[in-house]
Length: 474
Ligand code: 8LQ
Image (cartoon, rainbow, N blue to C red):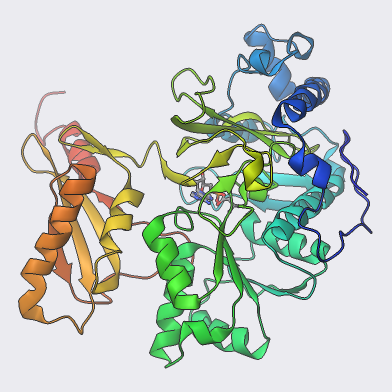
C-alpha cells in the first residue's frame, strides 16, 4: 500500500510483487511539477513541526525573520537560511547530548549513531523508532529500484559502529525481505575472510565504499581468486566519489562483473540513500519525496538552473527526531531536470557527487577536483592500485605531484614514458601540469573505508609561516 503522510507512517507488511519495478509507483513516477506542489506542502508541515519542537530552528529562523507560515512555495523556501555542520556541532556541545534540534523527548531516542569525529567534535544522531522505521522503508524502496529482491543475500562491508551508512543498508535490506550479512569492515585481516565468506554464503549483493571494493579485488587476486568468480550480481556504494566516476566504475564492473549503483548523501541526512540510481548507469537520482535536494550556488544558497554545477542542500521530509532543513553539504555536483525516460521523475546527478568544495584546489589558476585526477590516473594501463596527490608550494606557485603505483609486470625501462603519458593526459583533460612519479606497488596503504589521497603540503607551509620565528618580536 502506497503511503505519503506527515508524520510518516508505513505499512510494514507491504512489499511489491517481485516483477514490479517501482516500490511506490505513484510517488516515483508522478509529474515532477505535481510532486513539487506536494513537497512544498510537506515542507510547511516539517517546518511548523521543527518550529514547535526545536529551539535551534526557532532561533535561527527568528533571526532571519522567517516563520514557517511565510514559506508557501518552493521559491519561498530558497530564502530559508542553510544549516552548517559546525552549527549542529556547536548546538550539541551547548545542549548535550543530542542538541536543541532534537524534536522528540530524549527517552524516545532508540538508536544512537554518529560521525566518526576524526576531525573536531563528533556529532551524535539520536534516532527515534519512528525514524528508524521510515529509514528502513525508504532504503528498502531505493534498493528495490537497484533490482535487489528478497532472494538476495546482502553483504554489509563497511564499519558497523557509528557509521550510519552500514546501518541504513542493513535495515533497508532487512525491510526488503533480503538475507542480511552484517560482516563489517576495518578489522585487521578481515578482508581475506570477507572474500571467503562471500563465496561460502552465496552473497549476491555487496555494499561498501568503492575504495573497499577495489581493495577486496586485490586481496582476492592475492589469494588466487578471480573477483568475477565471487558471484556478486550487484554492488551498491556510498561514502565517497567512485561509483559514478567513469574509470573507477569501469574497474569495479570489470573486476567483479557486477552491476554497480551509486548512492549516498550525508549521515545527518538519513535516509542517506535517497540518491540511489535507478538504472544500471552512472549517476544518481534525487528521491525528492524522501529528502528534498536542491543544488545551490555555494555563495547565495539559491538553486542553480538544471544543467549547472553547485552544492547540494538537503531537507529531510520524513525525519521526526532530528529533522535537517536546508543542510549545506559543501559537496560538488551538477544536476539535470527530471525526465520520465529515466523511469522515475526525479532530478538526476549524471556524475554523482564528484567532489567537495573544501577538497578542491587551484594549481596555476585551474580548479581541480581530486576525483578528476583519480579518473585519469586509474585509467592508465599498468596502474598499480593506489596513488597520492601531493600539492606543494615551493616558490610562489603551487605545484602538483602525482605519485602513482605501477604494476610490477610493467617493464621498469618503460616507466619514464608511462609517467609522461599520464602527465600529458592530466594536462590535456584538466589543463594542469603535474609531475607524475612512478612508485612501487603497495607503497601506499589501502583503505577499507573512504580513501584519502590528497596531501596538501601548503597547509604545513602556511602553518610554519604563521608561527613567529624564535626570538622574533611579536
Ligand atoms: N559522499 C557520501 N556519499 C557519496 C557518494 N555517493 N559520492 C560522492 N561522495 C559521497 C552514510 C552515507 O554513506 C553517507 C556518508 O558517507 O555520510 P558521511 O560519513 O557523513 O559523509 C558524507 C560525505 O561523504 C558527503 O558530504 C560526501 O562528501 C561524501
